[in-house]
Amino acid sequence: MTVGESLDFSHLYSEETKSRKSSPLKTCIHLFQDPNIVFLGGGLPLSKYFPWENLQAESPLPPFPNGIGAAPSGDAKDTCVTSIPKDGTSKAGDTNDIPLSRALQYGFSMGQPEYLSFVREHTQLVHKMQYEDWDVLATIGNTGSWESTLRIFCNRGDTILAEKYTFSSSVYAAEAQGVNVFPVPLDADGLIPERLEAILDNWNPETPKPKLLYTIPTGQNPTGSSLSDDRKKEIYRIAQKHDFIIIEDEPYYFLQMDAYEKDPSKRKAIEFASHDEFVNSLAKSFISLDTEGRVIRMDSFSKVLGPGTRLGWLVGSKRILRAYTQLHEMTIQNPSGFSQAIVSGTLNRWGQHGFLDWLIGLRQEYNEKRDVAIDALYKYVPSTPALTVTPPIAGMFFTVNIDASAHPEFATKYQSKPELVEQAIYEKVIACGVLVVPGIWFKADGETTPAQPKESKAEPNPNGIFFRGTYAAVPLDKLQDGIKRFGIALKEEFGL
Image (cartoon, rainbow, N blue to C red; front, top):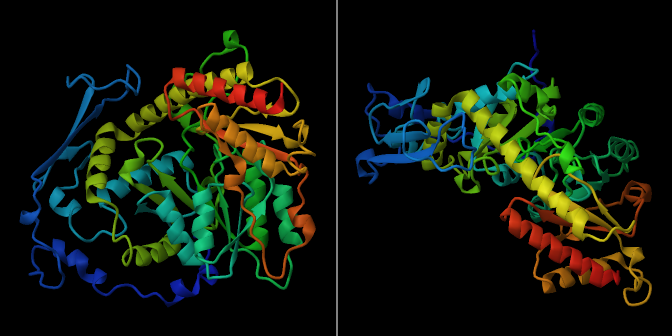
C-alpha cells in the first residue's frame, strides 16, 4: 500500500517553539562515537569513571507458561537474563545491548537506537501506520510528554479541549502554563463526537479555536470508558474540519478485556490462536487512522512494565518530533540510561512476539481483577436506580455513578448542591476505612474570555456525581473487602 507524507502543522506551534533553535553543541555530539575524531568539543566525562561495570536483571521468559506473575526460578527454562557490560558487545535477540558506556553518557536525545528500533517495530506491528514520514521518540513517560506538548503548542491564554472528567495532573499542568482546558461531555462510551462538533461549530469567533484535543481513549481515567472505533473516526474527521491536533494518551491501551459477563458460569476467557489474532482484536488507535500527521500518540511502560522505569515513547510525524527533540535537548536531555538499557535489553531478548505474550498475560490478569471488582460492586452496592455500576472493558478503574438528588437530605442539609453530597459520601467512605476518589477531583471546567455559548457547557444530568476506584492496586481479597466497605458507606449515607 502506498502512503503519503504528513502535513505541516507548524502554524499551530507556540511562540516558544517558533523561536527555539537547536543547540549547536548537540549537532556535533554524534562525532563522539567516531574513532577518527579526537573529541575535545563537549563536557562528556570518561566512561572509565562510571562506577558500574555491568548491569544484570532477571525476568520471566516468554511465553510465560506459569503466568506473568510467576517469579523466574533462575533456571534457563523460565528465566530471561539481561546482562549488560560497560564496554563490549552483548547480544540481545536480533540486536545488541546498549553498552553502559553509551547508556550513561550524554547524547541521543531522541533515545538510544536499540530502544527506538524495538518500539518503532512494535508501533508498526500494532498500529499499521498510514503515512510515510512518522517516527518514535523516547520520553520519560506520558506525564513528561504532556508537559512538553503544552510547551510546544500552547501560549498563555490558549485553549485546549479535554474530556469533562480527565486525568487531573494533565489539567493542572495546563493551567499552570496559563492554558484553558475547555470540557467536552462524555458518557459511558467516552467522549461524545456530536457534542465536540457542536462546541466547535458554535465556537465564539472572538476567541481563537483550540489547537489540541487531549483524550484518554482506552480505559479512560477516571471514568473507565473506552471510545469505539466509530467514535474515533468521527473525532478524527472533526479534527480535520476544525484543524486541531489529537493527543492520544494511551497508558491503558493494552489493558483491554473481554466484555463483562454477570453470570460467572457463562464466562470464558478469550484465547488467541496467534499473535496476529490478538493484535487484530485490539481497538483501533487514533494514530492508526491518521493519514496527515495530526495525531500525537503518547505511549508508556508505566502500566505494562513498571511506573518507576519512567520510560515511554511518542509516535508522530518526523517534523513534529523534531520540535520535541529540540525541547528535550534543553530540558530532560534524554530518558534514564539505566532504564533504556534494562528495558531495551529485556524486550529485545523477548522479541516482539514475546512482548505480545506478556501483554496477553496482562489482559488475562486484568480481566480477572475487573470481574472480581464488578461482582463485588453488584453484591455490596445497594440495588437502586440512584446508584449505577458500568463495567469497564479496559483500564484499571471502575466508577459508581450516583444521582445526588436521591439523597434523603439533598434539598435540606445539602441545599440541593450535588457537590456537598459528594463531599459527605467521601468523608463517609474514609470513615468506613476505604478510599475511593470523588469525580469532582478530575473535572475540567476552563472557559475562554469572552465566554463560549452556554449551550456548549450544558449538563444533561446536573445532579450526577460519581466515585472512581481501582482494581489494580491491591490483592483480590482486599479488593473485595474495600468494595464491601464502600457499599456500607453508601447504604449508611443514603439510609438504605
